[in-house]
Image 1 (cartoon, one colour):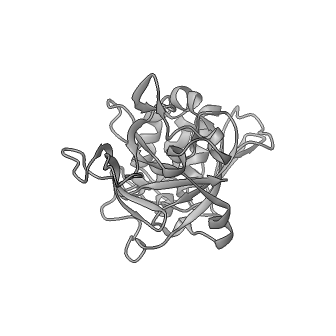
Image 2 (spheres, helix red, strand yellow):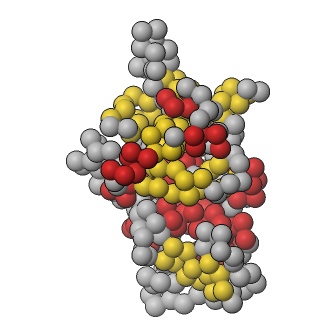
Length: 297
């Protein structure tokens, strides 16, 4: 892979401090419409799991040796079509609209119209969309950025190999909602959170909990979205293979039942856990970077 560089690479290691300032955002209902097309069977085998080591290496380095050209650390993940697809979703979650990463990738086939990235004559371009971790462009990805990018990737996994429009919501300025979007995407599928960048020798830390709409049954856009539903054959897992944490909140408080998230504010879940509890979650620390997914009715 041929890369261009006009300055030295940033040293490995996670940057200190918060990547995304959270102050003043907790009470806002924010969202973004995204088309997801990561089929879960491919994701678990040929995409995230297979490219996990390369993904972890990316986290400890900046993405770009310049503001335009991919760094040398990307060469491993960009070497295969599966890796390029994973990389494209990472970039669309992390970088804002209007920002791209480019790389010359020997052997990369030209992409079609439905590809989430573009390659032409072995030159590939990966576009940003949400901007959940913009500083990753020239700094290592810190723990807060890892949380947001992980939640975004998990939220976009789909059990079916179809592209479905979903509304991603959470307390982050990159997830800004419009009145039209809020009125169109009203069915609450669930919440997604975890750590894609966990240790290589540990299972992927991916979690989902069931939203109120999903708990009420299949309708609208929920028909083709099953990653926040328990697997009947293994209720501790979702149908997509995530850790299933139960219902996101108690939907029948007259008969209290366990739930996964401590807070629900203006359509956003926060401080969610990997297990259910009745307001107490022993030995289960909260995840603070949580994305709640809504679909159309």
